[in-house]
Image (cartoon, rainbow, N blue to C red):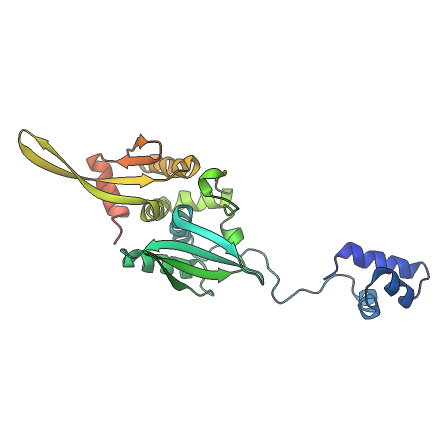
Length: 244
């Protein structure tokens, strides 16, 4: 498809009194195309051309899916246009696989979702022409090696649905475990949540959201955030829960 500048150049040559044949020979453009541009110079819309990004159909589901994507998601181009969204989910958590699938369909109800088996995990996958605008954090290279920040409209969704965002992040790169200790000869067990990610930006998105929710957290080490206080764990259990 010729761009608008090329079309205008060809029409300008005709306006100088040149014939269709001579302009066609000089530019390498067919006479039929140049003749059509005399009637309409703007390109006709293509059937597979991307339209304006429609935004997520279900903002709450999008907030959860955003957390999953930032943890274990990627977007890759299709050779004939459009992109595949892929979220990696471990085989051990069939409930998570179904929640991921449900979230994708809620965000893009007209799309389709299929599951590709990999070694030890599945890739919950959906093809579409708007995944790159729905997830503008996509880009070449690993997420922890580049800047990750939310667009204003994404932050507005996270602010409205913070627990869904936290649940998506924990379900992708987090876990709920039971720790134990011995005091006065007695064994005590207590649950805690961990989140592990190499990206300071993604970790910051989580911890800032936890702060707004009143969840106490600690930076266990360079890549790990720990939530261990009893009241905070109780809130996490109420709104997030373990993967299953």
